[in-house]
Image 1 (cartoon, helix red, strand yellow):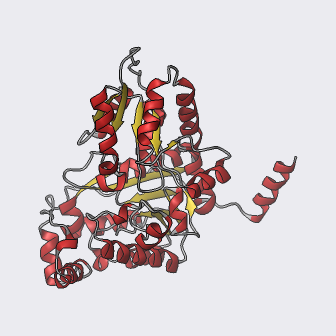
Image 2 (cartoon, rainbow, N blue to C red):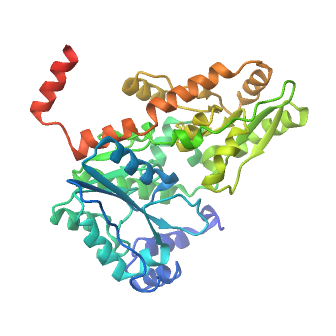
Image 3 (cartoon, rainbow, N blue to C red):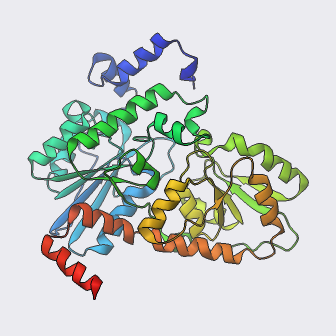
Length: 413
């Protein structure tokens, strides 16, 4: 792929103009290149169970989180039917969803777009993920217009930000000296413009807003943290024990190498592997279903070193009984402590201090205590209970003043 930082300014301006005008002639041509729609009527629309509350989460399902939040809501509230919808992007990681829509149909099938809008209009609540339009190019592909159309049908709409959709590069670089936005592979002007636009959309809407990671509260201070969710049973696989005297087994999954800081940590990892201190496993292109055994074969998982936060991969590794090492900002650690009373157990390291930490871990004969901290934390914070509570109490079923008095009285007693 061409690095946009290498292109002339006029070319970048033209690219952005096309992207910002999806209903123009050129925009329509670009949409067709994403794929032809499936045969008319062959792609289903969302269906809900007959429950008093019906919630749709759409349309991205990043890291399977839309599905996970939907299941968490249904476990928390027997009067609620939750469904999620996701765009099937070729080359993705094959996350399960209640409704998977081919990318060509999502963009280019007006019939499906209308049917899905009618289905969503039968929901009581719709959670729009990552400020992406849930109905493709319907209503000019405008997220705001689609949200207003739902509200005109009596649907309660909220927004949930996942990450780069609202993470403002200028703010991130000012607060984080190792910010991945400083990487030469990232075209910051476009990222800045999109994040600013999405922040304005959410704030101007006046609708409830949620973020999936605590660092995003810096960008959307009026939002509520809805923690990412992992299926603890799925990740509680039998671990492969490390034989005495063998190298420390270290795994790293550079899904987005620039954001993870892979290039910054590889020199240290290569030195340690050459010395026989560690055995390195770079996990790439592995489908989601095959990740639990991959993590079960690792002692340590290296997470993010440039984002200043932690996400789904770190939680999955902790649930699998791995020791997770990464760089987590003080703001994130303090926010998690304030909201949960727990410390984030991820071991803090920078690219400069990682080598020393791995040498110490390799020499530690008993890592079980650190593993226990990891599994206890993810079981308390990221099993879905706190996520469902956030969505219910701050959007779907907020407490009435009478309820709040009862809760306050119960707390005092």
